[in-house]
Image 1 (cartoon, rainbow, N blue to C red):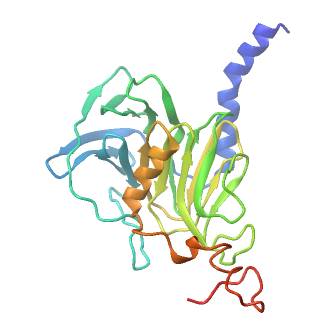
Image 2: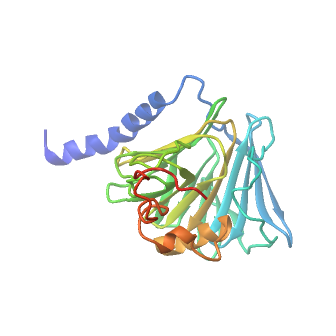
Image 3: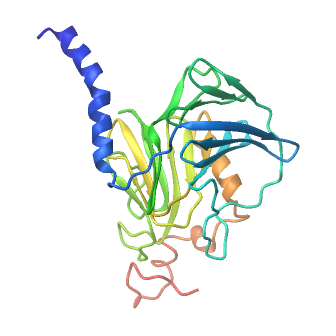
Length: 292
């Protein structure tokens, strides 16, 4: 078999193999979003939104918060459900605002265009692709529609071998997650591998970050070079997407949305982990949570 023919065969079969593998990785109750039935713009001085409805009666709303920040929500039975909070909201209150954008019909997709972002909406089935403002430079694309199973909401995005992923809040002993899974659940403890303060957020060095607005336990899978998947144990989807030319820009948008501390915590000005190793108490063993 010649080298050009081998490469051509691989290019033709890889999407099929990948799609089959992704299908097997989901449970038998998987329910991807269906085909787009209708779309409606809701734009005024207080908001810029595009509301979508599928033929399976799934509601999807895209909210433009900035030129480079969007919120994507999806729910079954033509309704959106807010996160079941624990006496707190993951994001801080937002000042209502309108974002300048254009919504146009292209050959086989609808295009949402801002000064910093191009978001494609493919209708059959409903899925999304994000590009830089030129609508040519791919940031990510959904490899299958958002899955709203009864006990699991999943988004599967494209990735590349040279892409690096970070985030997850306090993930003791880890900061980069290529080839790993990121658990988004409270484990307590202060040892390596513990998660005393996880956050449902990840970011890529390709210029974007995602905050899943949920209190439900989850897991993010970065094992493959070709795709990533983010799971949360609930039948609703709610994600904020931050785009920028650097991790610094993405982090700035994330912390603006989730709130910034006026000062570093007191223990951050000392040595050790939360003052565990610098309090002069020799009876305290490393890894214990300090009082106060």
